[in-house]
Image 1 (cartoon, rainbow, N blue to C red):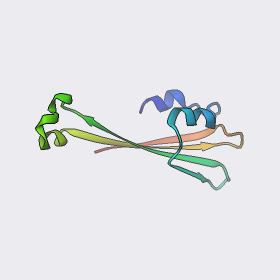
Image 2 (image 1 turned 120 degrees about the horizontal axis):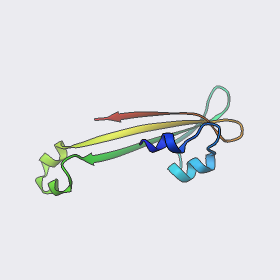
Image 3 (image 1 turned 135 degrees about the vertical axis):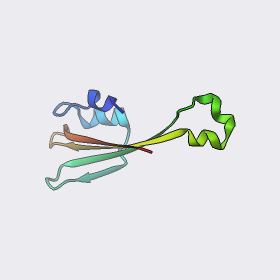
Length: 91
């Protein structure tokens, strides 16, 4: 998800633009300063061996890896990105 850094710009990107890029957040909350915080959780599964392996059944499942990432965006009072963080997990 290297595209996050190139698309999400602190002090510039708006809530509308985030909505167009990532869709609806999984969770909307407020932080201590009463600012909007949007959380996204995405999961992708990549097959390391390529698509020809899907006949192999069980062996194919062992050669695929799952990645999940959480994107947490904090907005300022003008609905513009104040800060964000990306937490990526591969397993």
